[in-house]
Length: 512
Ligand code: UN1
Image 1 (tube, rainbow, N blue to C red):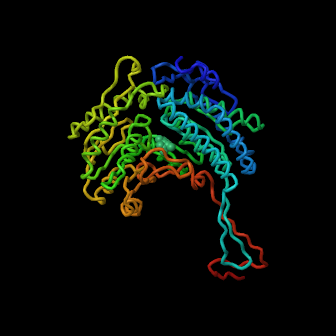
Image 2 (cartoon, rainbow, N blue to C red):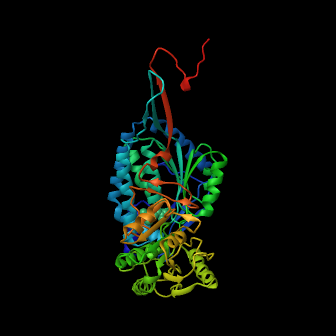
Image 3 (cartoon, rainbow, N blue to C red):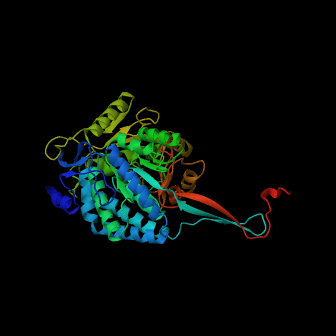
């Protein structure tokens, strides 16, 4: 196959038929049906994967529960040492895994490599974190008493990931969860299962080499039905799910019904405000990568540009000429900027959104459309497009996972911020300005309402060191860096009396 894909699959241990249920190095038999992973790059069936059945799910959960007994008592820095080795194993396969991600998901090879780098980065972060799972100490109001808090592991963490970052988002969750002392069960997207199987092989070798028990990392495959087993399962105290708002509402409600915890990272409807005081070279470049990178399939993709009226026409012309230079095609070929959408359903959603926005009054500035002919046989390649639209349009209020950029005008910064915040989602946002007052107003409490707010940077491409996630319908969860680890642990407050009496708090007297 092209670009050495066949050899890559071999080196990563992928067969034409793969079991989909694993407790680590063991792969379990299942009565589940086989489904195909089809590359949007060329329409080829990469491999077949067997769905997990109810018995397989039970086996994975019980192994996980068993492994947790050992793992939770291993000192956190020793768990960090295992994650350090996983980081090194990922360094060794960076090219291969990056290529597989690119081929299975359709993002450019550069972005595939970037995704694996993101995994390596979170491993490094988690290793350091394994010595910094800090709790606070408090001063007790009672004499001869000491108070402090400690963070203990939670148990089994269920991870549901999306096709667009098929491996990095899993690693944000699992690497942090592992140093925290949790064990993980992962359901990769059924649209990108092969990348998940490859990861399972990579980490299983590290666990095995360190004589660790089976069950630290369970893998299950299938559609929402298998996800439902996790969300309804009280043995999984935390479900971390990435995907659409629709999915998140279902998962969040199911987990809440059993009073479990969920960590949701859902849709974005991210905007860049371009002020009349912006450095337009940076603004155009930031908007371009934000809007067309990963063919518009990042949750952080720039979907709306809110442009000050005095620079509106200039921005419009410069964007038009930048879009004219985009080369669309096989993402493994490094001369191409934009690859395919994930599947033909995504193409339909893209066409439908363009149609609907036009019906509502949107004006196509750079026309969209599906590409046909040589190199585009999969039917998944579309043209990035720009539409002049208004924020209240029904389609503009929704996240369409495709390279459609909505352009709109503003007069005052207050108006721009109101437009930026005027959508149901709240993931990422940016302002392009060299004016300190504008930048600070945008970042203030009265500014952007998103989980991520940037200045002179686009909306996508966050580093792992910060907490990642957003507000409103984005679901409120935070993953990755900063103190996101706290979601993967339970806090315990401890009060110790080393005096020879028993004073009560709040000065209560109770003598007999
Ligand atoms: C996602 O699209 O779900 O900030 C994750 C970014 C990447 C992660 C995106 N680091 O664009």
